[in-house]
Image (cartoon, rainbow, N blue to C red):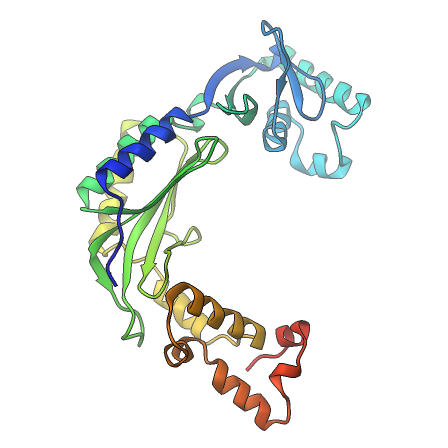
Length: 312
């Protein structure tokens, strides 16, 4: 199965959109912010109040000095005048002792604050993000296979080298291609995680939990040098995630419920067009049904919940 990749024209078009939707960034001090409600604030010098998302409000609360544990315990902290007054008093007390500056990032289409960062350098622009991405792509002959941008400028790019194909365990009929997923968002900043493109899947998988993942909060010359060196080491391994084989072997040896096996078979059929004989190799529905029938249990008579409980 050939690898479908983005043309340069398609890439540039998506890149342009990502830069246009880059959240607007401005810095202000805590003493200049007044919390009006659970989703609005007032900033000194700006006539109109500004809306915030729930995520941004939680980040603002942390900047004020209200912990997440405290928020959870109190519940709807900003839901009444007492709660709002309390947080504003904490904010002013903190500002009086040592006024802090925070960076707000506002959605271009919604004009709402969607993220609050303690440091201006916690996030990078999509323009700088593309500088990093395009260098890695060029250095390691990678092609973009997936590229998404949402309305708030959150950008995800998955790429791999078509020549970096490898096989795993005894899956002789399958080909894996290793790569990386680049992600940039106002809430989480810049991160890179392993990406594996599998022959029988229509889409690849981002594997954030692997040790090869990188999250960056500072971007000094030394930081970038260390990052590009890590990417070079990853490339030397064909972008094969550390521990992938062990994870796959564990998954293959794990018991799955009848419901899970049937769902996997349905997914393979709808997404890959594989016939029942091919699907049986990966998701042995027929053999499992026959095993249950031999034990006097008809799989077709089991409810959805019962199928979740039954495993091979």
